[in-house]
Amino acid sequence: MREYETPFAIRIPPEDQLATAVFRGDRSDLVLFDRPTASGGWEPVTATVFATEVRALAAGFLATGIQPGERVALLAATSYEWTLTDYALWTIGAVPVPVYDTSSPEQIQWVLENSEAVATVVGTAEHRQRLEDIDAALPGLDRVWQMDAGDLSRLREEGAGVSDAQVDERRDAVRAEDTATIIYTSGTTGRPKGCVLTHANLLYDARAAIVALREIFDEDASTVLFLPLAHAFARIIEVACVEQGVRLAHTADLDRLPDHLAALRPTFILSVPRVLEKVHSRAQQRAQAQGRGRVFGWAEEVAVRHSRARERGGRPGRGLSLAHRLFERLVYRKLKAALGGRVAYVISGGAPLGTRLGHFFRGIGVTVLEGYGLTETSAAATVNQPTAVRIGTVGRPLPGVTVRIAEDGEILLRGPVVFPGYWRNETVTKETLSSDGWLHTGDVGALDDKGFLTISGRKKEIIVTAGGKNVLPTELEDRLRADPLVSQAVPVGDRRPYIAGLITLDEEELESWKKSADKPADATPAQLRDDPDLLARLQAVVDEANATISPAERMRRFRVLPNDLTEADGYLTPTLKVRRARVLQDFATEIDALYRA
Image (cartoon, rainbow, N blue to C red):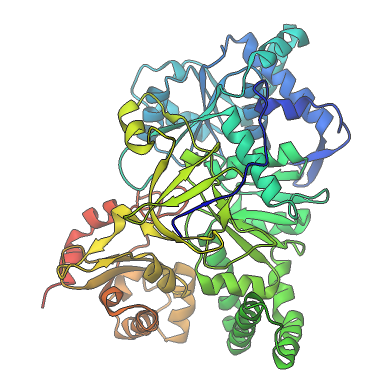
């Protein structure tokens, strides 16, 4: 199939804007948020309290002279204060420009310069220090408000002299077609580009997601948001929760995430595949450490078989059902408890999860709904739905979205979620958006006869071997990373005689492997990278992955890198995708060695 469209189901009135939902007035006692307290607990925030705080902060920004359409940079970790700031700025027609809280001073400077931000809100003193390290005269550096220093409270006090009528006048002047935010892509190549998203873009995408996922966004729904709000994926969930009245808590402390999940007991969470891969790997490691590795392996196989049986439309046989009930008591219940005990669905995006892992999670009772989109589509364009799941795909288009597969396999998208263009970059906008509204995504994929989209990889990442074979490395990467010992896998081989690869090690799993293989406890990845036992263990992983793909795609040789790929070193994006171009450049010597006799 070359094209599939889901009919329109939503209309965005021209006078609508993102802050409209905050001031509805018909849900005053509804708890919208759980906010962390100084004592380490959580306190509820009702819609009335949130509206009061948004209005007060909006008045504060208005009092400082922030004008409609002016950009205000937002450099902070995911938090309640981030959402409060977003909605306060939207209320007065200003444009929040998110910056990843892991960004370097150079990256921050680029966003401030390019967006021409007039002020900056930061989370911590450490974030403020990064601003002070910028050697440039920028308006956004002259006015800086720090969340954890009480500056938002002082802003609200400063706005005490601004009347409600003045705030309402500014809010009423904002239109759906106005710019709501500029989100800079965390792309794997080149300098980030500013994606302009309107109020209508974000409202439509959020409301379309609510329609598509109505079984999730019900009256009892709640979630804990831990992904960076600088990313469009997390931002659209923020908007959807406020729109629908879904109870939302924020945390950026991943070390304490299990405690937060246990305390808040959400019904669904948002994640990227790497987090889910680590959940699976950690559970497997714990089982092995307790001498229950074989039991976990059986439980995993039963979960996958049970899910596959459901997907085929039949009912699992009696023996499989009995085994599934047994492992529910022994294994699955504990895994679900680690997510808080009530999570039934995980919405996943940013990269492919892998079919086996998708079946594993559904088999234990936590269905992962993979979706697809870009910053340029306000986040979501397609998604699997609770009533329409095909594991291994990214689902069907959201209402009003059309997916087309071009002759060369590229995925094209059209609909109200598609952005109007890049910030002050008409040349790239014309290259990306056709005159009739089709967005060229740069991704390659296919549609089945029911409209489910499968992603094969990026056009730019296609490896063309010396023999002329076109290879998309995504499937091989996914299969290799499924092993707990493998942290990252980067297939290479462009204009080379065969596919080879670079592999990095998961540090926690390496500790477990060293004990089982009787290796020195203080041995580092760099010291073990040529260890015969380690190479044999990894070769078995590679062989298993190779058995599932075509000969042209198989990895013939590999090299273990001395360290993992990290965001801090510039090898991963903030959403944990590998920056292939940077890896290929920096490890060119290692790659060359893979092709020597």
